[in-house]
Every structure is written in structure tokens, then in C-alpha cells.
Length: 210
Ligand code: GRF
Image (cartoon, rainbow, N blue to C red; front, side, top):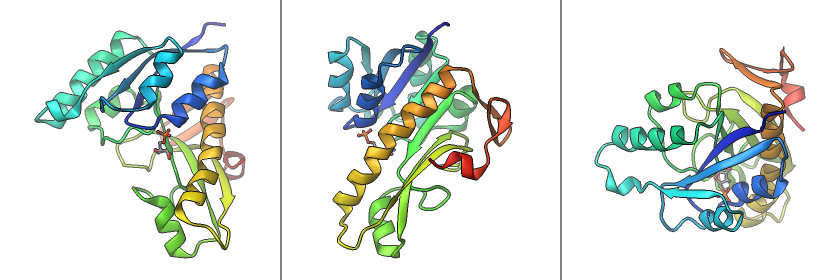
């Protein structure tokens, strides 16, 4: 089977990227890691693994579209079949997103559609919710609203603080992102309109939650 060429986009810590690298999936070839922040720690994980890295510093661009166009050119240089956002903290233009329709994934630290946006752990604690989690989804033009591929839930415990809860969620992130990538690499995963198909069948909500 041909390996799935993948490019990952990061902005910071890079623990999801590290989990993807450490999974050593024989069906996946990480061709490059691109960061919009020069100091992103995740770049080091890539370099240690011998993966090409690039920095495209968004502060050097006056318009979002110019940054996205440069980013697109650099991504396409590697001819990836899958692009994964792994803690990439930039809003992308519709032009960019549409260019990669059906092959652009993101991981979000909440049980979407609940708690879109930033500071999810803090907001979950403030809400009094008993359950929290993480979701991997296809990226579409609506922020954090693309079709969901896989989710994992964790309990919110009585003595939780943001840090403890975030760590519990992060463990699950590392598990489900690799799983989603594995399905994609096996050519089992597909985006059809707003539906996610696994083995040609729509994923029901109970099948998405692991
Ligand atoms: C993760 O919580 C991810 O869900 C969110 O950004 C964070 C990135 O963490 N999109 P890391 O850089 O992968 O450690």
C-alpha cells in the first residue's frame, strides 16, 4: 500500500504532532511540518524525527490572504494527500479551506458542537458540565463546525482545575488524532457533503464516540 503523504501545521507545543510522529504509522509519511511561529516547540520534535520543517511567520504578512497563499504554496510543494492542523492557531480563509476540501483535519479540545472556540477547559469548568472531551473533524468554512470524525469523552472531576482537566483531555487527543489519520491512510474515511463516511457508510454519533 502507498504511504499517505501528510503535512502538519502547528503553532506551539506540538504534543499532538509528537503523538502522530510517535505512532510511527507505517501507512503515513509526514513530509513536512510548517509553523506560523518561529518559536514553536513542536518544530523540535519534527527535526528530531528527521522531518522537514518550515516557518511561515504570519506577522510578516499584512493580509490574511497573502499568508494563506504562501502557506498553500509551501504545503503543495510537498504534494500531501492529508493536511492536519495540530494546534495551528490561525483562522484560515475560505479559499484555503476549499482548496483542501476533504483532506484537511483539525483537533479541537471539546465535545463539539459544545464549546467551540478558545479556552474550552475553563469554560467547561465554569459551566458545571460533568463531561468534557475532544473531537477530530474535517475543516470547513465554519470555525470548529466541520463534520465530526471521532470524539473521546472524559469526566469532569470535583477537584478539577483547568490544568488537570486539560491534561486528561490531551491524553485522549493523542489517541483519537492518530486513529482518524489511520482511517484516512487506509482510505476508509471520506467527506461527502456534510457527512463523514467510514467504509462508505455514514458515521452515526455513537460510532464517533470512543
Ligand atoms: C490542543 O488542545 C488542540 O486540541 C488544540 O490546540 C492544542 C494544541 O496542543 N487545537 P499541542 O500543540 O498539540 O500540544
